[in-house]
Length: 134
Image (cartoon, rainbow, N blue to C red; front, side):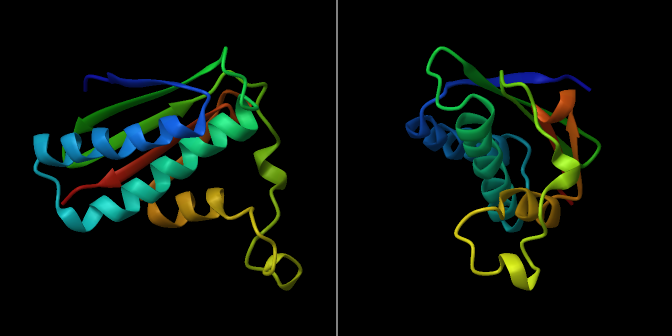
């Protein structure tokens, strides 16, 4: 399995649009079903947005790195920021009555629901997601 350094993004929300271009190339390169595109796009844009806003705190001197690998019908993504990480074990559940009306706080929930495997590494400054492509 070869990990590809796909994107290095500035900590600017305008950078998020590059994710869509990359994902379209990956879908075509590995002949991945278009049905998977939406789940991957939502998950990756959420991960990159969180890395820019919460990890790097919009610090333009810091970058977000997105890597991927494809192996035996699965595509693995890794999104890394330069922040200190966070306590991902204590995130509130956005589906509880207390949090249903809140504007934000659903990104990690969505990533977990849409990917086939999901985990945090490096104290929360790296998110890994895996999608079955077949």
